[in-house]
Length: 163
Image (cartoon, rainbow, N blue to C red; front, side, top):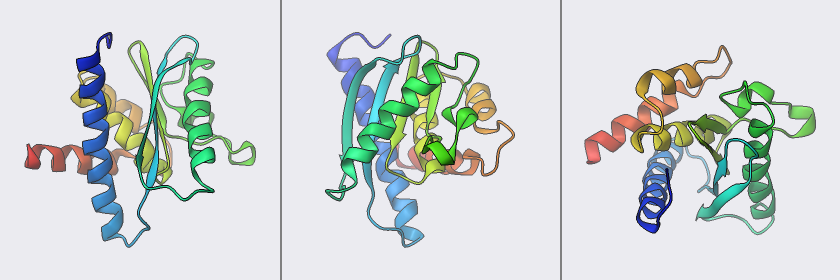
């Protein structure tokens, strides 16, 4: 359980590390410099425990990213049989993937491409030992196209190399 300052700081450090790794890969694809919001929420009601910004966001983008990070978490909470917000994704309603259930928490990110949002959450949850590798792979491989499994693998490999 994340119930003290050091555990919160540890999780935010993980988010920052994996955000930087994702940025590295996205820059290799010549994507613009990203930014976004991470949200840690309660798995039962979707209430945010904390929200933090990462990277650089255009002035017109940050309200949307903040909204989507919270919306993904809340949508996942109201669908208790789902492990990923991708399972209730609806482009017409602007409801995107990028949040996962990890024990008593929901981890959500918005601001990267959708697969990277979810890969970042999977990498943080796995590294923080909220889920094991089998659970991470099962969430990433929920019979969808495109799957964030490759991005998750890239993040974990890069973290292990740099550790």
